Amino acid sequence: MVRVFFLLLAVLFVLVAVSLQSSCGGDEEPASPEGAAGCGCDKLRRAAPGAEDPEEEKEEQRASREPAVKYTAAANEGISEMVFIPGGEFLMGTDSPGIPQDGEGPQRPVHVDSFYMDVLEVTNQQFQSFIRATGYVTEAEKFGDSFVFEGILGEAVKSQITQAVAAAPWWLPVKGANWKHPEGQDSNITDRLDHPVVHVSWADAVAFCSWANKRLPTEAEWEYACRGGLKDRLYPWGNKLNPKGQHYANLWQGEFPVHNSGEDGYVKTSPVKSFPANGFGLYDMVGNVWEWTLDWWTVHHTTDHQTNPTGPPSGQDKVKKGGSYMCHKSYCYRYRCAARSQNTPDSSASNLGFRCVSSEKR
Figure 1 (cartoon, rainbow, N blue to C red):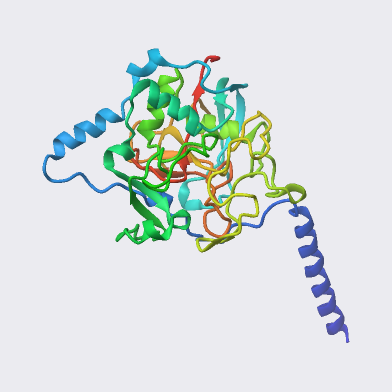
Figure 2 (tube, one colour):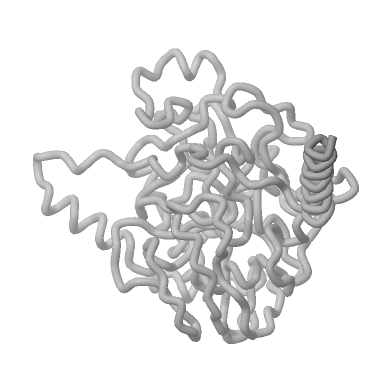
């Protein structure tokens, strides 16, 4: 009888502990499944240059990645509203990584100086103004194709494609896909001028920012801005993904990659300002489209205090932040401020865009 009493007591203790743990963390999403895969957008690498004249090709690619200083004089100062981001200290990264292999940790103290950031992701209309003013040709246009998510393509386009990304077969190289033809030659941006521009490489983003007398943000600046003044929170607005049942970002709902229910109102990009801004007044810092940063990619970080870190001096991939409309908890839990991913600088895709920053008011 005594033994039964103690067994019941032990069970009661476990139930209480579980209940307490649940109530304490009730405002946070559960941890991402360990080993969760990604949307595959970090696998979108261009084929190696052809054998005909590799040195000439390398030189062309190297030149295309240099800042487009020649466009600076044509900059339109009113191209995009910017908001002042007051400098300060913050904890970059996390000690509770959702995707450890991405180098989200360790959490580390960082100081960033004050800067100005575009309120919005660069839109199709803004990028179109840049193209018209400069005659710039994007890398996707030069290559003749770009990667598009299969789920937003028509059957006619898919029937003409014979290859895919091995690690992520839902990514297809579509001929004629570029910033003004997001799903291929038969598509256009006429009704999407207020959507973020996509199919822009890192070099394309640098060229636009240079034309506008701006630059891409460092990863530290981007993450500091994403947090909107909040400390130790998953998202720009807090720890709960859908506060009071409301959607705060354009993400994937349903089963990835086969069904997006569009519960948030969108199954691909959404117009900028479709969701609430964060504490700094910035829109779409997570979801909608990935955003390029200045930094080269590394998964190794010092825990020492740093001031205005800029990442390693060189590398093969560039850091991108914020996730996209393709991100879902079960598959690509990268719509957190601390989350990160990478692409080669010449990569372009139907969920990859950017925004600019400046050290001076524009």
